[in-house]
Length: 82
Picture 1: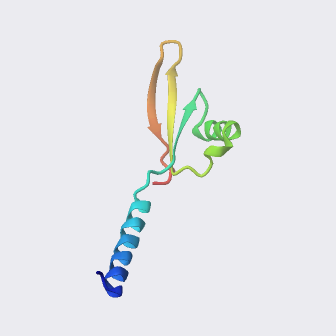
Picture 2: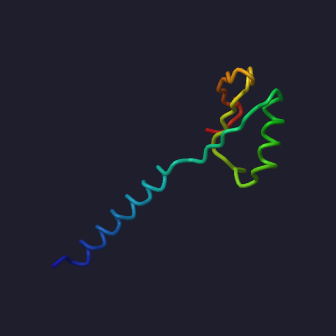
């Protein structure tokens, strides 16, 4: 049988491990398509269409360079929060 002190120590260890796991959960990432506009205009357009994406930890911008040829480049906003 376990003593009360052993049970308390194990419960504290479980709480510590659970807190670490919560800190490792993935963060929210939003992909925003830029169609010949500034990143700020694209961000506003995206959040008007998808208000549930507000408060994202990362914003990744997909900049369309030549839409007819399907070429694109990825950019990340320099002001985005990490």
